[in-house]
Amino acid sequence: MDAEKGKRLVREFLNVLHSGDADGALALAVESPKLFIFNNEVPDGFRMLAGIIPSMFDGLPTREFTAQYVDGNTVISRITIRGKTKGGEEYQNYYTFFVEFEGDKVAVMTEYMDSAYANAKFAPPS
Image (tube, rainbow, N blue to C red; front, side, top):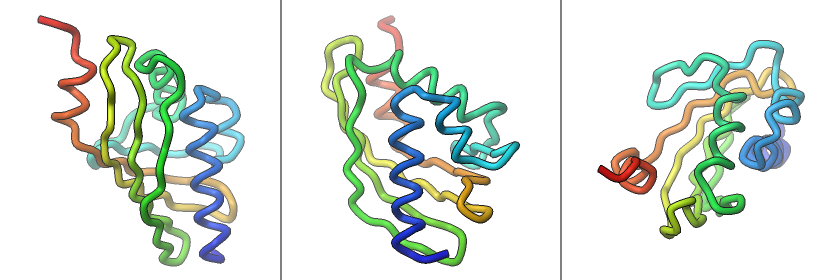
């Protein structure tokens, strides 16, 4: 895959996914794409992510791509995601995504983030 094309496809896919448009994201993926979070497969993961992200933030979060690397059909992206939580707190977390393509379609995405930080920001008050 051409490096610039791969980077662009990841940005487009994540923009659609994080907007809450599950069908739009799935249109950019193979028939049965896989999502892994910390190496654990999430059943129907893209639909789940598209549904949960808008419910966690007051407005859509922003993404700052701080680095992208391409190796064959895999694009690795470092991203800072920022937004305001539904609880009114500022959120800024650091993510790494590994996205594998089949042609121009997303086949597998693996996501890593600071989960302790995310849990502290999104966990219900005790």
